[in-house]
Length: 230
Ligand SMILES: [Cu+2]
Image (cartoon, rainbow, N blue to C red):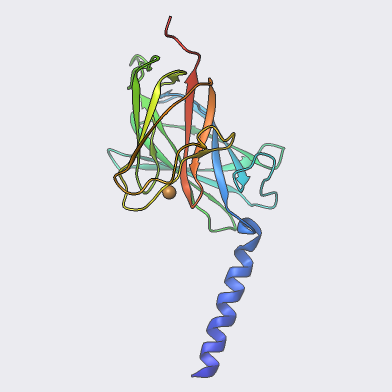
């Protein structure tokens, strides 16, 4: 009885120490570098994903194996999978993928040998010939864009929003969540309990990687263009 407990503990320690290089002192996250916007069905696209440790630029997992990228069509549930290879700098991985079925896709990435799947902002695949109109109109100064927070991620606008617009964060999940960006853009947003809302005005144009520190899968890219109030 005692012996089996010790054996169990030994196995548990072994498993934990094996996973340690990827998670030592924090967490890793996948950042989608490309594609940035909607893609067209049937056309091959380069999918570039950067792996960052702790979410801090410059801190990355250098000894990771192949990165597996899986994209699942949210409507049909059909998935395509590809193995991305490192493209030189040790933290950026590329896979050439062709999406034949239009719709909205969600991503999952897995970096072997570390068990650290993470989610990325969704991808819109347009039918060939379909105009690439954004599914959400860009927001101007004085307007409000609501961004939902669920337990698995952020409901981000597909189109860029304009600097000067107000973002209303709404926690639709069952747990408390935070909103942070790697440039501290949303440092004013408090920890939001389920059901809570918070409004903030975004002043500076740019591309923001937003995430929830306690939940490594909650990552998204928010595009903010220059103010278009005039
Ligand atoms: Cu969270």
